Image (cartoon, rainbow, N blue to C red):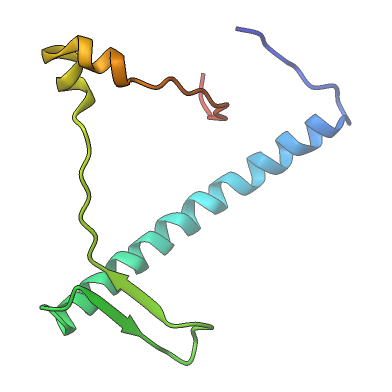
Length: 104
């Protein structure tokens, strides 16, 4: 692992300081936003329990919100790899990405 120590006054130095200032705010707002979204879902599904799609409007919204019930299928990759590794290898697709995280 490489370690980088930004030069004082550099662009990276400024970006890291801004990141440190914004991250707690973003985390707090994300948590609050997710709690509001979850509560809206509960209210809408209670108001229309049989519906699979619900549209709601409000003067505060720029556009209506739509709640949709979505089912999906997925492959249990861990189980497939354990029980049929040849099939797993035949269909496995490798991907890579950069991930920026806090911590040691």
